[in-house]
Structures are given as structure tokens and as C-alpha cells.
Image (cartoon, rainbow over all chains, first blue to last red; front, side, top):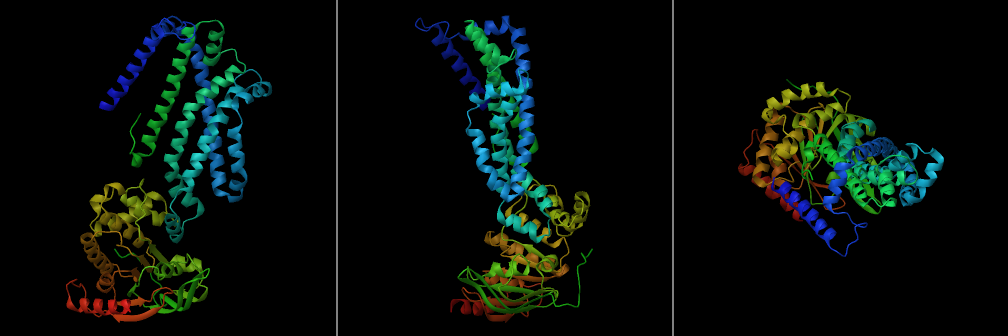
Length: 250
Length: 253
């Protein structure tokens, strides 16, 4: 309760400071919209913003789903097949080293103008934290526990199901939290490379058309989206790993 | 209910001229040892003398470099493994399973469905006074309780040979005494062939029918004590103190 109050106060403080800076005479209105102006844009352009936010949210959610499916499969395969892990790990890291901003236009060329390139970029960004965290989690089982399982006659599959997978859940969720927050960035990059709808595109357009309050309204919505996704993952973690409740929500 | 588990005629456990090396390091040299049916044999020795290696050899988790380890007449690792239940030093309970589920894990490893495994674990919890903790997760249990659950997990698959690796090593002195008495009581009603490894001479003398003292590395049996005392024993029995003193004397040499 006190923690929530504190967090709320901090947000309020931030908004106040933002308002203060924005009202300074020396700050250009085109660079910085004040919270009041942003709120005005949110209210006036709500249906436009909401429609575009829905488009972006769909990209983010489907992209995340793809990356979770691919990440879990990949991590499991790498965990179970040692040579694959050794061979694929550098590739995995390389996949993250490629600047996505550069890839985005290529994806647009490859997948056309629709939702395809956005999903590809979101999935590419989110794949890494999910795979790496899950893989680390799977490998973190204490060796004595594996020995015990062996002494009890457990099959490889049984050990995976009863020990390694549940033990890796907290790591998987850590990966998911990172993925949830960066997924929104991925969708924005995707839209910047070429799109005719979505919050990212709206922000870019607003910037070109000098509609600064609308740009800030878009940014606020994108942030809310990322924080909301993060909170959802944290909730899911609480439900899925009730034994692991050291940290509290937000 | 007895958990049935016997192939009665075979000698449960024997070491014949067993040696085990790790690279240049000799862990065990020339170990000759036999354990008869339902006997509790305690092996004591200084740390690093290869006590845990001894257990892992029996459990089929390691192979000897020389000599033969036989469990119920079998020398193949898989057969040895199938005849033994191994209890490691740490309880290693799964934090996401309740106590009953943790004990049932041993049965699930044999392909028994979870619900059935839990059903079979239940009577054991009732018999050994753990009923009210069935649904507790390990983090809600005390160290002593956790170790009891770990022991039931070891007992449950009905393997004829139990291998206990410093089972109470991590517990405080009072809990430890408690658990030693509990274990003695449990084995009295659920008799098994037991190989117990410990560095605590007192614990060895209190629990075992026979105590073997291993030398410092490389480990080799250097002395043996019969503990020919009636059960239930009292930890305060002067005869136990006598054995303890003699074994310590050997260990200090």
C-alpha cells in the first residue's frame, strides 16, 4: 500500500516537473508539449489514437506470441541437444547484435507493407531475452538434483517435466518481462519502416506535421502499453510460480 | 502396511577389492565390505575420504576402476540403481511441490501417474506423523521436517537398499537427535538394508548395527565395530559412548 502510494507520488512529481519545464519560456512548444497539452490531445484525438493503438497492440501481442513459441522451442532444443547449443549460441547472440532499425526496411521489402514485417521485428527483438533466459533457467538445476533424479530412475523427459521446466519458470518470466517492454519498441520500428496505421506511424506523422501534443499523447500510450504488458507478465508469474514470491508486483 | 521390496535370498550389498580414482587422485582403495539383509551399516571417516563416492558406486551413479560392487547379486549400474534408494545430503525437495508431491516424485519416476503416486504416499505420511504437513510447501517446513519428507521419498519406492549420505549433516544438534530417533523408529517398522555415511561417530553408533571406519584419503576400511545393543537405544547408553571413544581413537590415528 505504502509502496503503491510512493510510486504514485513519484509519477505525480514527474508530471509536475514535466509541466514546469514545458512552461519555461525558453523551451520550444514544438519540442515539448506540456502534460496539459498532451492530456488535451489524448481527449480530443482519442478515437484516432485508440484505433491506432489497437493496431499496434495487435502487432505486439502476436509478435510476442510468435517469439514465445519460437523461443521456448529453441531453448528446449538447445538444452536437450548439446551440439546444437554449442553451434547455435553464437548465432543467437548475433541475431541480437544486428541493429533492428536497419533490418526493418528490409523486412518491409521482404514481407510487404502489412502486419508481416512488424511481427517479424517484434518477434526478432523478443526472441533473444526469452530464449537466453529460459536456457539459463533450464541449465540452472543443481547437479545434485539431477543426480537424485537419475538415482530414482527418472527418464530424460521426466526430469525435464518434473524438475528442469518448473525450475526454469522464474527465468522464463524474467525473459518475458524484458520481452514485453521491448516488444512495443519493435512494433514502432516496424511501423516507421513503412505502415499506414499504428501508433508508431501516428507519432512519426505527428512529428512531421508539427502536432507535438499528439506525438506526446502517442508516446504516453506506448509507454502505458509496455508497462501494462509488463504488469500482465508479472501477474502471470505470480500465478504460475506461487512458490517463488520473493518479489512483489511493480 | 509394509512396502514390499525384497529379493530375500541374495546378499544385498558387497564391495570386492573396489578402487576408485579421479585422475591422479585415489578416492577409494581396496575396499572390501559386505552388508547383510536388513543390516544398518554406518561408514564414518574424515571429510574427503571418499564416503560419498562409496554411496554413488552402490547407487550406480559411478563405476569402480577396479573390483566389483554387487547389489542383490547384480553388478550392472542400471541394476544397482534399480535396487537402491539414495538420499543425498541436502533434502533437495522441489519448492513448487507440496510435501506429499515431493515424496511421490520417486514413484512418478517409475512411471506411476501423479494422482496414484500421491495416493500411495499418503499412508506413509500418516504412519510417520507427517499427515498435517502433506500440503505444505518445503519453504513452510522446518529443516527437520524437510529431511523427514526427503526420507519418505527415499523409502516410498520400496527399494531394498537405502543409501543415506550424511542425512542429518545440515541440521542443528537438537533437531538432529530428534531425527536420529525418528529414523531408528522408522527403520524398526520398515526394515531395510541401509548403508549410512556420516562423519558423526555418535550418530553412526546410535543408528547402526555395525560401524566401519575409513582412513583419510584414499579411503580404506581400517576398523570395524559391532554395535550389539538392543533397540530402541538410548543416546545416553554408556556402551555407545564406549564405541564412540574407540572409533574416534582410530580416526585420530
